[in-house]
Length: 366
Image (cartoon, rainbow, N blue to C red; front, side, top):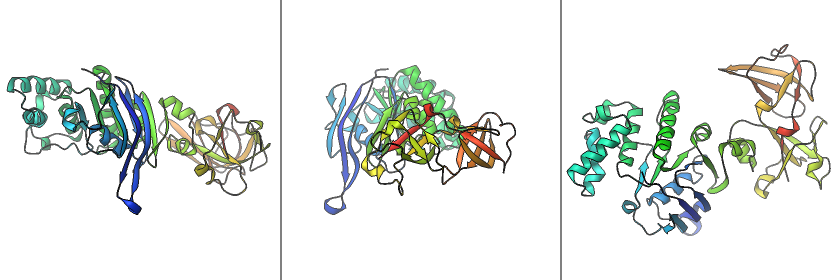
């Protein structure tokens, strides 16, 4: 199957006029390599779906460029972009058979009957739906209906596949199964794929790279490992995975690398320092100069000694992970610790000690 490279340049989309104008996408730029699985991730209303719809040609951008293999697609109508689109709602015709649902767009394009038979057959076989060709959508499960919508998108032999929250209507277990199927299919076909989701676990599981959106802007782009380990903003650190945030003062105001003092008076020298943009710096409360972020799996808990004194408030068994919540003078909220094994000598209500490795701590400062 052919695959396309995509370049987005200063893409902006505004709705409304005058005083009511809303900027849904604000000067977004990124590149997607041919054959890449690229995910746009963020909360509802952040601009990711509007960006996807602009690429598909369903929304006309206010400004910017959409380049596919170097060709500007801004003025190209949707039906001539050779892009397959999969919607959250599946958008299947309940009165048509699965075969006819997949064939519908080809019939509108005047494709010959023999070519329709070939393409639909191949598409249904690819998605393991050949046995259901004569059935109607109502006779299929949610996962099967989603595969039909993917088959319909692939029947055009597109150079690019766009998926907008394709698993949102499925239950948790089926979502995990379907995301693995979609990723395996993409790898097998080698097709350039843009995927939109608000589920960070889903994005981490399937993507070659992730673009994190917030309030219409692209705030960070990178591999799942890069986004998780080196978040560039407090928003990304909080949105991707779980994190502890500890208020701190800089020991030397002009030199963040000199380390910080936590609220309980203890010292720490985080391995990485990130200067906050003004809008995030304004959210810091009181006299604090910044916050230290550390992931729960990097915090260690011990009954006999460590960096910070604490009291274990709660212990939760979450499948293969144990989550401890501990109260400490270093934080106004409980510090979370996650481990695969129970910590010896620790029970709810027990006094204990926490340790935060400097190598895994990130300082976000004014």
